[in-house]
Amino acid sequence: MTRLKGAAVAAALVVGVGLAQGAEAQIAVSANDNKVVNVNGTVKVVPNPPPDTVAIIDLNASPPRVIGEVQAPNSVGGPPLSVAITPDESLALVTASNKVDPSDPTKQTPDNRVSVIDLKASPPTVIATLEAGKGAAGISINRQGTLALVSNMVDGTVSVFAIQGRAVRPVGTVEVGGEKAGGGMVAITPDGKTALVSRRNDNRISILSIDGTKVEYIKRDMIAGVVPIVLDIASNGDFAVVGSLAGSATGDHDSVSLIDLTVKPPRVVDTIGVLGSTAEGLKISPDGSVVAIVVHNGSNRAKESPFYNDAGRLLMVRVTGKTLSRVAEAPIGHWSQGVAFSSDGKTILVGNMIEKDYWVFEWNGSRLRATGQRVKMNGGPAAIRTADK
Image (tube, rainbow, N blue to C red; front, side, top):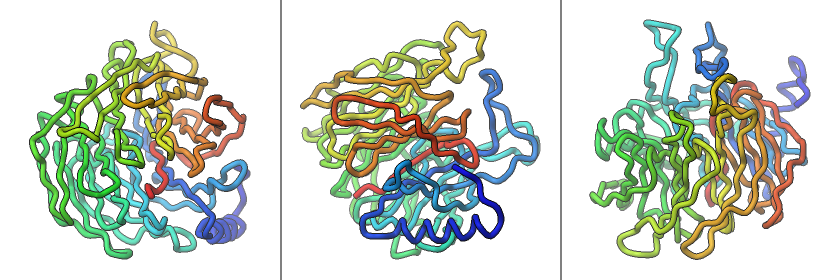
């Protein structure tokens, strides 16, 4: 993205955000972490870092372009789905799992903040800062636009927030295994009655029941790989896919698993390898036909490591009934994180922390093509999301 100066930047953001709110527009929201960098395989805190940013991306433009930006805390720690957008694209909620430790600025400590961002304001504006649990990470908003859930990685709890117009307020906390279980991502089914929560410490996926703002852990757990964190639910509600990242420590290849939500109780029905370590980012296509998976593939390792690779991998996995199959792949950048589809499923964005940009891919249902287009971010793109509708 070409950088403009002073008043020109403000003018461009105001005009761009206005365009993004049109009837045919679609936006993606990116949370960009400025606190940490990867130095030859080691994550280090930046001395006196600039503020984290949240960028609004116009997915209708070719190539996609940034049309607005606001400062708000966020973190690369946790699943790259720490952003959620209301179905009408009016609000974004962004979590922060980590912050710079005020007692030792060379380290991070768990955070609990949730920023509420007015996307219709010109420029976009943080209108509230709320508190979730310790290590606030993956977040989802129901398709009714009335409820948000946050998985807290340290507490092993889920924070519940009610949404009414532009007002967001905390209404409760649900323990899901506690600290020994940890957390990760929470995803809500299209009917708004059920949620799945990943538990990174004890390798489980838990089921929550939802009735209005009443959220309960029903004590049904599933096993889907080792160290499950990232997960998503298909737009038709028939299945979910969850990724594991146990190989991040050992260099072993990781996996993704298919959860059948049409049976009672839901259960894992298939698992497939992702051809590399760390299934970091994951998103199901709008039509539910494929899953785009971001694999670190050792790209975040020290160059002298036997597990180092000079590229991550974008892997496309087809969902056919109750089975998964690998159908396409392409190299991506380093220490890559989130992935997002355009509403027609033909454009894919993949965020790269080291390059501080998104790479743009085209998908025609069977072939994956790198366009060579880049969307630069002001910070490392730690998470990205479009509205679930």
